[in-house]
Image (cartoon, rainbow, N blue to C red):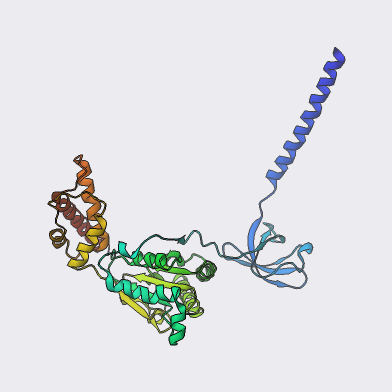
Length: 368
């Protein structure tokens, strides 16, 4: 009996020792300092390399002997924290990480979902959709379509919707980015982001790149000395270089949008770049009626609702404001436990949206 107990204790002791060894190894792993991720800029003889850390700083460092001859420019690597010695190669860095800055999608917006912009839709069909679908037509006649189109006009008039509808109609990938996102904290990163976006666009072609608020990087250049303004200019120059570098009949098209055409640098509207400018206005009376029909299509309206009369109350409203009126009218009906929207609901909604827009303008004037 004692012998059996002694054997059990020995086995337990062995198991405990194995467990202790595993825990010690685990603790040792926790104590190992983390490695830094960097990028190879260039390689030199005698196991030397120029590397760039994520913060933009560059260092001339040693390379582990087993990596000699295996590193190339743009490789992603791991370096030791203190000496920055290169100890491992992760592989070729294909792209700057653009996922944090862009929206990549296949939109599902049809031309018939956009009201009051018949002429503007025709412009986009000619400049963007037709070259993507039938490039042979342009080759036969011997002309080159514009590489891009610049949409300008007041906020909320449907510039983004037009771009998405063009992507849907052309069966193209839609890459959306806000211009201010292209301005990065560290020197050269903004230009690199622009380059990577265009690389990704070529890979996912046919593609439409939509740059909203392009005035944030393409404003008229001035003789300025701050590093931030110089970085904006570097990013802008990279954008021009990318636009100049691809074929007009290629599978990548660019649409840009701005509310401030008055401050746009003329360099971007020269022939071969954004040489087609399209003004997207607030809708006229017929346009307002058309937009109302689109947004009330699925709504249950009372017989007294007259869209023509309603449109007269909405003069100078943008497409976004008209949509907001329809949504707000629906809320007024819901609050009264109704499923039918009345003319009174629309009247109250128009008044509410008008007041909200007036308050916004007052706030902007005060801030300015």
